[in-house]
Length: 115
Image (cartoon, rainbow, N blue to C red; front, side, top):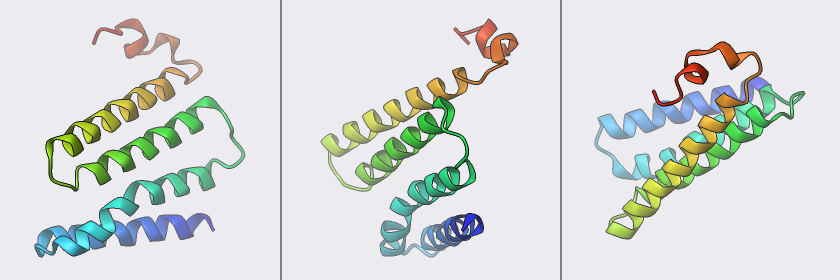
């Protein structure tokens, strides 16, 4: 099952790239919303034995990244702003995830949070 998600994700990446390179918006429209959920499924499968904040925060970040991708596929200022908002929340979850890593107290970001 582990390699299934990796394979599905890889195939979807190839479909998405093929749609972009061949200028086929329908293919991009179908494949793009699946990228982050397949990546999340792969993450959750690979880290099944772990249930820490890192795993959950990354999964939430991928969920908000999916929402941002989908919202930015539509025209209009409200979709654009909502998509940016979703990506902002996703990045906050990514930051939370990486700040939760134990033993990172001596890391560059912990020492220089402004950076």
